[in-house]
Length: 426
Image 1 (tube, rainbow, N blue to C red):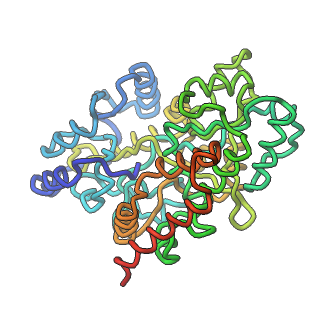
Image 2: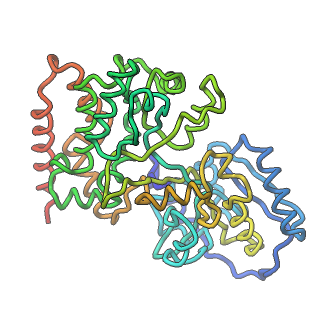
Image 3: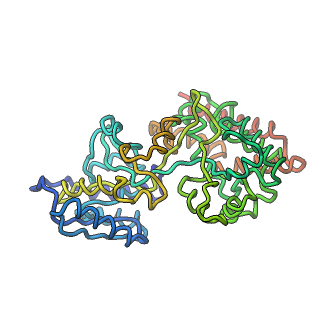
């Protein structure tokens, strides 16, 4: 959720110039009347009909819900928000993540961060000054999707929780099954940016600034680089990373030709459906192989965030609808192959996973100034694109005769980072 889209400054200026203070209106405390819900889903008419039916059964005084499914959502809703007419309940546009100070101008506060944390997961997707202005519609985790049947055939008794045990497991798969142990997703390897908080924590950027070198041993990026180098140099990845696309790789995972790949939990069920046994439970997901305080991390992210318009004339009903929409009762999270952010609605299996893991976000939660400094150094050092770095690591591992040694590559990155960092030292 918290990503900044291009054109953000222009949009911010537009919003800042046109925003109006919420008007004090006569608000009913009763749940009833009509609502307008604006969504970014244009493919979910039947699901929305089911949700509407369930909500009205729960609150019979509600007469009607008008759904507005908007294509090119961020662009259109940001323009519409320059007026007072942007629905009662709406998805919070991704673009606003870069200007959280604008949330109070358009959305009702749903409560304080500290207080809501006891009842909900991931309450800081749309927060400002300790107040929550939006909650996740569904939560998914990032991790390693794997084929349990190949693990069994390879003699792997437990899922690996550290890089050394991960490499050991990959070697067993290669030796005992003949399948490809790991798919790198070379063309879209930037998705590993979502793994960095698992390796370095939610404040890995400020930790890197303190260290002064993003490529020093133990830093988040370096850990991922080392993992990729070990996999590639030991020929534990696909033979031709450039041409094998992710869709074909998922099919191979389902058929047992590939053992592991990195993706989100929302892809588990679709990959299971690709197997000969459409209900196969052999396709599972595990956390990234790195431990903090004896536990691996469960990195959660929201595919969407929903809030209540502070211009709504029916805020009580709008809030009741938001609570219903994100609950397990509505079925929205399950439809998204995710889980509800409402802790009371989690299944026993989900509760156990959370209890056994360090729950973190896929996006670093940094002070804006630290985030900006980190980005400037990365850009000036020429390593702003994680894709470039990891692809080169794969190239070095697979084709050492055509590339500089890995240690030399790391040393050159360290040198350029440290030089850039000195320019931003206090």
